Each structure stands twice: as structure tokens, then as C-alpha cells.
View 1 (cartoon, one colour):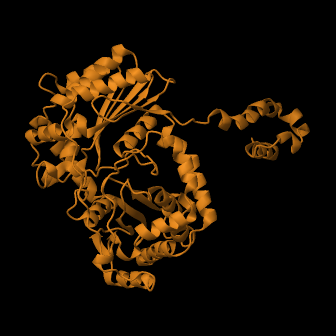
View 2 (view 1 turned 90 degrees about the horizontal axis):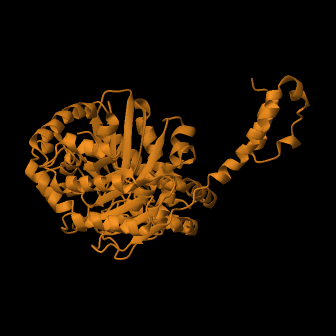
View 3 (view 1 turned 45 degrees about the horizontal axis):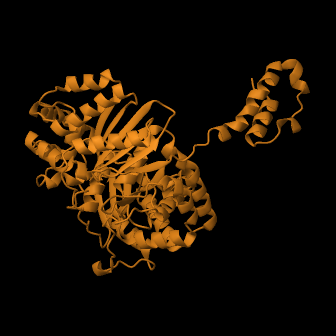
Length: 524
């Protein structure tokens, strides 16, 4: 059993101070000799942080002769190779195959390893299993990602890569496989109807984006996927899963010469094709858009947000800092302080930005008791109004930046994470050394940078608000929101709303944080 001496010892060790200066060990020597034997082990804890410091991976830009951007990070710790092929072929491309054909990218990802003309699904699975390889494909809003993890031994690596290329080039997307996906989505549809948070998320995107390609759920709808044919899936593959619509990321136990050869093998053996065209510009709101989903429950769910900006916007890193301060940093965030700590309205409230090829979104959400619904929305909205209108707290901003810097090594603490970062860097045209220069970029961000960014990009006067609850008084809420706005945020005319940045830069960007994809598909 611990006694007070043990707690004093542990506390002093954690603080990095000498335990012997504060603790009298005489009472321990007769009764608990095992404590003395443990002291050297406890003292060794002081060295753990120093021993486990992660160094930033060195990222090399490979000179791929097929003009396919290829990034490589050598890692000698494991005899493994991680490969990520990131195509500009996410769910935003669905309707480029046929109008209303939502869910085609997602279905292509699910069915791509279900068979070719010469190999069945079992043949493909066994081919990867024989060499201990892991193959997967996933569709997101912007990206279609194919991953392969395999031993670096050429006897394992080469057949795994060969099978991956056969799957990408020759998938047949058979009708029987499509029917299996259709039957599975019937279960997913019922799960959505029983999940207020998932219904809320789907409604939010539809309300926010209207007719834009980002509006529909990534897996499509029951009605849209029932129209998808094998021929349309093959057309999607032939148009988008091609070499010139791709970037390659490689991490593992290879040298740069071997990595270049591998990247050229992949780029040279895929259909060459063309780059996908730029996405359309979503339409900005001019006022509040409040929508209600009736759901019988004592809990109400709320999501508020607006169009954000692109990955290419130079304000992106300042907005990342702003988001951490407002709702992204747990109990220290403004939202948590206002809604939970001060008033106990919710267990948790969080905000986030999604930065995409076309303008992404800014949103924050929480759940609360039905009888606290209107008050909680008023408080959350007022918190955003104040955050935009009042000067940034410089001390809190510095603490936020320090926390972001401490957390940044989590982005490259494994080969898989490193490779995901390379995929994101390549896809969004960031500089190859982004991971190395991130600390300097973050350090340069000032309170004025953050203030300017939020006043330019956050608009409390034209939020989209989704409420999932049993009872809801829309008119009462509108009155409360207008009280919050006056007089700082008069409702603008449509002509006064600035356009968001949509065009990717001609040169690599160096001022945006790389994160691997976080779009979670809705099961519909």
C-alpha cells in the first residue's frame, strides 16, 4: 500500500527534482525495504522523455520520370515498406460520371479488390497473404487512397506491388459484388435513423453545400447507389485512378534509388490518363440557415457552422491556432469553459475546421438536455461572437501554440503516420520539407495573425444551424441570435460576402499543417 512518503517521492520525481533532498528514508528502511530497491527504477523515469524524442523524418522529393509527384522517407527501424497512392478521386468526383450518382467512389474503393478477369477475390486475398502484405482502399471527399504495407524483402515486395497494380488496372466490379454492398447499406440506413449525431452531420453538409459535390454523404444514398453499374465503376477507375491524377508516398527500409525505382514502376504501369479538373465554388450563405430534425429524446443535439476555406489559403495555420483556442483543446477551450465548466450544459463541446480543395467547413457541436437547448445555443453563439470581436488573449495563444507543438510529433510517430503525412503533403502541394519547418511556421504566428484570420473567415451572422430534438422553437432561437449579433455583426448583402480561395497554388505551400484524412463516411 502507498503511504505519504511514496507520494512525496513520486511527486518530486515527476517535477524533475532530487527526491533525496525532501524525503527522509529512515522510516522506510526497516518496514518497506522494497521501496528503496525501487528508487533507481523510479529515477530512470526522468530520462524517458529524453530517450524518446522523435526526430522529424527527412522527406525526399523523388525525380519520377513520369512527372508523378513522389515523396520518400527512409526508415531503417523496421524491415517494412509503406506505400500510399493518393488519387484526386474522392466522393466529390461522383457526379462527373453521371448526375445524381452519389457513392460511386466509395463503392469503387469497397469493390476494387473483389476480382479481376483473371483473379477472384480469394485469389487476390491469398496473393497478399502469401507475402504478408496488407492492402486497403478508402474513399474520402477529396481523396481516393490505396495503401500497401509489406516487408522490404524484394521477394515479398515485388509480388505485392505487382498484385496491387493488377487490382488497380483490371478490377471488374462485378454485379454480384455490387448487390452485396446494396444489402449491407440497408442495415446502415437503419443505424443512421437511430443515430441523431449522424443524421445531424448529413443534414449539416447538405444544408451548407446545397448542390456542391461536397453536399452528399461519401457512401451516397440508398437511392443513388442502387443505380450504380459495373460499367460506371469501370469508367470511374479509367478516368480517375490513373497515373497523372496521382501522387505517391513511400516510407520504409529502402534507399532513395530503390524508392525511385518503385515509384516509377507504379507510375509507369498504371493508365496514364489526365488530372482531375478543379472543383466548383460553393455558394456562401447570406443569413442564418436553421434546420430542425425531429427526434424523440431527452437529449438535444446541436451543430453550428459555416463554409471555411481551402488547404491552399495562407491563413490556414492561423485558423488552426484559432480553432484550438475556441473549441479544439478540451477543457481549456472557450466552448468547454462556457458550456460545461461555467454552466454544466454539456459533457463536451468541440470545434473543427476541415480544409479541402474547395472551401471546407468550420463547425462546432455538442449535446444537451432539451430544457437547456435554446440557452445553450445562445451561449455557444455568443462565445463565437465574442471570439471574433474581442482581442486575442496573447498568453492563451502562446499556450495553445506550445500545445500544438508538443502534439505535432504524433503526426510522425510511426511509419504509417509518416507515410500518411507524405500523402497529404503531396496531394495538397506542400513543400517536401513541411514537417521540418512546421515549428518555425507556428512560432511566427502572432496574435494579430490569428485575429485577422478569424475576422476574415468566421461569420457568426450567417451560420448554418442543425438541431436534432423532440421540441424546437425556431422563432425564439432566431430572436436570441439576433440579440447576440447587434450591433457588431449586421447581416451583410450578398455582394459584400468575399469569395473563398479555391485555386491550388502553382508552387508548393509551406504554411499549412499536414494531417492525414479525417473524413468519416456516413453509413448510408
